[in-house]
Image 1 (cartoon, one colour):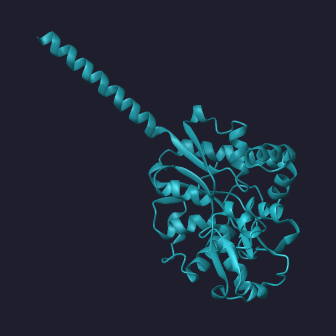
Image 2 (cartoon, helix red, strand yellow; image 1 turned 90 degrees about the vertical axis):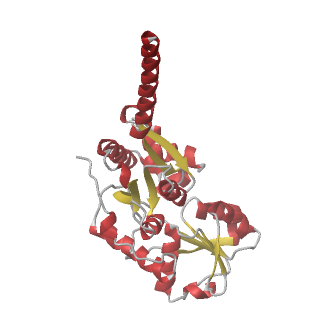
Amino acid sequence: MNSLNFIKNSVIYSLLLLLISSCSSNDDELTLVFPNKVNYETFIIANHLGYFETEKNGIEIKTVNSGINAAEALALGNADVCAMGDGPAVVMMSKQKPVSIISRYAKGMRIHRLISKSGITTPQALKGKKIGIQMGSSTHAAFLGWLNAQGVKAEDIKVVPMQPKNMPEAMKTGQLDAIAGSEPWALNVEKLCKEEVHELANLQSKKNHFPHLLLAANSQLEQADKIKAIIQAIDKSNAFIAQYPDSAAAISANYIGFSKEDARTCMSRLNWHQGWEASDQQSIQTTIKFFQQSNKINEQPELNRFLRILKDD
């Protein structure tokens, strides 16, 4: 009887150890999420070339369609580290989500474009027109800043919230007069609508270079070694882009559905350099300002509370 109990207890103990081991293994794995689209080539190339060394570093890779999708994954606990633009990051911070900005991996003043019907040739001609925008995106913030600089009131524009994948068809069928988007959304509209549309403006701003950010869940910051492995991979990938731009464009083109030439053009609009500077903070504050003025966010986040910049030591 004692022998039987010993065996039963041993089996139960072994099963408990197996369960605990399994749970620990899952907890230790860090999930990195990034979009398979232009502006995220650093991650696409790093993953393609094996720079993340996922098995060695305990990193799981997942991809989504946009920076907003990445932010949603982080907010819902389906991701530990995410890449996104400044727009989605500001929205998350305004909701006081337990996240931190740990790096800026790229930036670019010329990444957001306004594509309109060819007959619209001035900013003032947009008054009363329907503009398709993905609300809460970095492009949304860029568009608000551009309108302000042009002296056009946001309330004079009919903004149509829209998923970027639907923008080309909406423009082609006359549902919209213009769209604002980064790539590939702007280029997709140009390719489908051809001479019916043109680039009315590049939504660049002297006060905002639209930093591309890496955010982490605060609960995962203790896994510093894994996070630094991601940062090291980003540095290697950015160096590859700088040294072999044609090869980098060819790699990313296969993932985002562009030609190599289109990918190279889009990549040239960004400065692929990781770090953190005073201008990054100023840029994010600019996005906060216009989101608050447009009631996209109800509360202005205290940016310094969310900064935990990590470096590749």
